[in-house]
Length: 239
Length: 231
Ligand SMILES: Nc1ncnc2c1ncn2[C@@H]1O[C@H](COP(=O)(O)OP(=O)(O)OP(=O)(O)O)[C@@H](O)[C@H]1O
Ligand SMILES: [Mg+2]
Image (cartoon, rainbow over the protein chains, first blue to last red):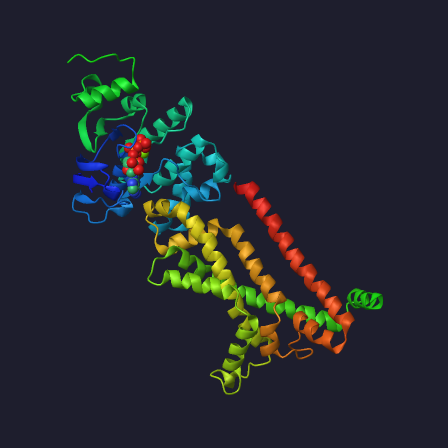
């Protein structure tokens, strides 16, 4: 599936320009974080990579795989859970895999264990807290053992300690060999967790760089202003 | 008037054999009808909700219209099909409980299917992207949605049971209200009232009303329970 190559992706709903020519290569390893202002098209870009949204122009190539479908999982910003148990929800993504009941159950429980929800397996998913819901959504995706996992603001509504837990899980999923591309508005999180940063603004990828370099020496004016806006205590950058 | 009422109570309290036979047959016909109609109507309604195919809108309108289908019309159509000269005349099913179940199934399937379509379509709007991201086929989506909506769907099935129990026209035409064989609560009430057997009609009417109330009470409590349990 890798490298995934997006070339000249345009997304212009109702003639409004959201993405104008995005080029992006995703290789086989690591965690890439996409950052950018509200409405920059981060969610749209993830959906395009997941094959859930067709761009109006441009191409996406999964290294020759026409349909890498089952290798990709996505966790939405507001995951929807079925009105049933935590266990049932966690195993939902395995339905199309045609695993034996025993194997599906084993995998589901194992994954729940790893996100720390095994003891809640029989509880109703809809009654979980925000942090627990997010962990369940991660478990549901992780159980599918995807090659590529797309996460849309996985900690948007979580407090620092729940955020910490989710970041730990994301790292573990990466260590398991899954490629991760995620978005966040939490730049501290981006610094902590990512290997590289994609900075999206004005419909394009303005900058793509290893994380430490991006935050120490952003190349573009847009990125400097964005980081200053989000992290105002970093008053200025030396040119 | 008071006498009629007392006699009706007396029929019920001593479990009059005629009353019991009629109630029992009504129950069996309704159960068979609802089972069949559920097996057909639930998957069909869910499929219409989820699948995209040409004519989907027309099917939806048709189902909704069929919900209000006059039962006598269904009765006449099934009568024509089952009568001696009809395509299935050789099977000799006319004026039998089987014929009654067939006619009522035709009546109840659209009701259950239309309600199912509505319920499942609402849920589908919430889950569609999520299911697509999990690479669900149509079959997986339908199965997951039916499961997710199970408590609301019970209400659809009970609506079907209510219609089956309280419908007169179709069972009258294809069943014929034959005493001890095809006489059910509604046909007995319709005919015995006219013949002057008011206590029997009243007794059966009370049973019918109680059954329908019980069904609805059950549905109400099931939904309350499910809402508390699953949020
Ligand atoms: N299916 C769609 N049809 C029309 N417009 C869309 C569609 N999806 C997204 N958009 C528009 O594209 C723009 C970018 O949306 P997107 O959700 O990708 O932004 P974002 O970068 O994720 O923002 P945020 O940080 O607020 O989550 C928005 O203006 C949105 O209204
Ligand atoms: Mg977004």
